[in-house]
Image 1: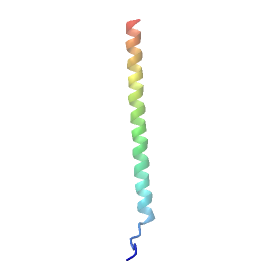
Image 2: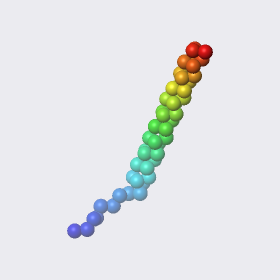
Image 3: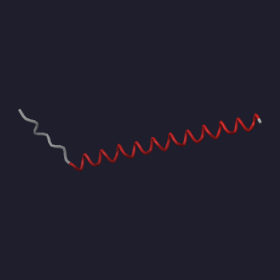
Image 4: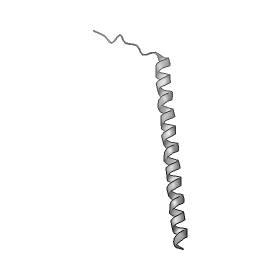
Length: 49
């Protein structure tokens, strides 16, 4: 009873590409949110000066 299931390399490459794209998109979204948060913090500080 051996493992006869072979995963095509093309499928692995496609899955890898999907995951890398998702990670990139998440990182960009986090950067955008941080930029927005820092900008708003700066705005609040300027308003109180």
